[in-house]
Length: 476
Ligand code: GBH
Image 1 (tube, rainbow, N blue to C red):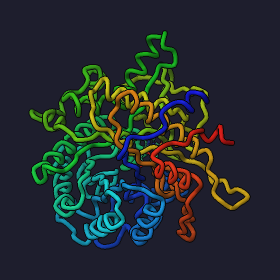
Image 2 (cartoon, protein in one colour):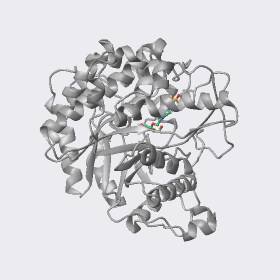
Image 3 (cartoon, rainbow, N blue to C red):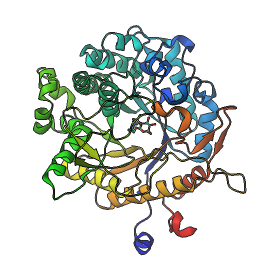
């Protein structure tokens, strides 16, 4: 492996885009300011037992008030792009009329980014549905897709002159299957049929939003972000295991990829979901709306799944919540470990899986432009003798995944950029503030930001546009 890494290409293509990622609810705080109303994550996190330690989105990392300093930090670290999300309940608090005061925050953010030569990379929906819309049925209702397109249109009306790159949804898998079936994400419902309806309505909302923005602005670069996993059978020689892997791949990857890129749901998934009425949700014209051509695909990659037939278990279980299963209609599943090192989330570290996911998009789906929109690791703080936060495990994680990205590029994948999750430690959903994904440490008592050693390491990678000659393990 050492020889291979020393001889392999270590430079990224010229113009490769380097960024960091965040999401509104995870960093902003200020949940009642300037006309914002509750999102489903405000409600969920205030419900006892849903989020570890009762943590909520207040004050998060107070980014709403510290935005200029945070942009300066990005600039000092050498980031060329910033992937953030807009909070729907700031912009259309009731799903209805536009709230200019809420939009103003994003106008200021975009101005600040452009003033620092940082490309804004805007996500419209990173899970914070206005509670008022959930009260009317949420994503299980078809009308929510139309409300989303209206919201997208109003954000584009305000920012379209300065923002070129638009992502509709972040990880519709999480919204639908974790939110409405497993119940470990907001709104915390455990209703498999509602989750399946949510899958279709999210995809429809995506397609309607794409069409609304295209109408306004033919130059907009449009995409969606999916969390994709390689899924393997525990025993590839056992047909029952192979079929279990097929079902998980169907719900995690293909139920989104196929409609978006081929204009239809996979037949096997439709069959598995017959008891949950997937086919019945589809109206005439929906699939063409969903499959509107995209300019880029965003990939979030963290780990893999190894699945066999057997006793049901979720891929991870949220703290405290009696979790349902996200795997609607998939029967009995057993998630296994490959015996690899794990991050603080318990997720196995398998950089080669990123190469596999990217190659699959290229080969099976003929996807053109791809960006890694999230990749990163939760690590506990380790303070070294010099008093630095010496997160060597995160450095190794990033190094391995960047080499995996290079391998995909060398094999012909049109990967144009990499956004690290995350710029700052933040609210890690059901895990609250207990898991730290930041390149930059946040002291939650004082809100002081301190770049970890991984941030310094990534700065130098970005400056060189190349990974180091030797990986971190060899250097030590
Ligand atoms: C991404 O999701 C998200 O886009 C980002 O917001 C998040 O902070 C980041 O990953 C790190 O998790 O333990 O039962 O509550 C990646 C997909 C989302 C799948 C969280 C696992 C945990 C389920 N993951 N989910 S549970």
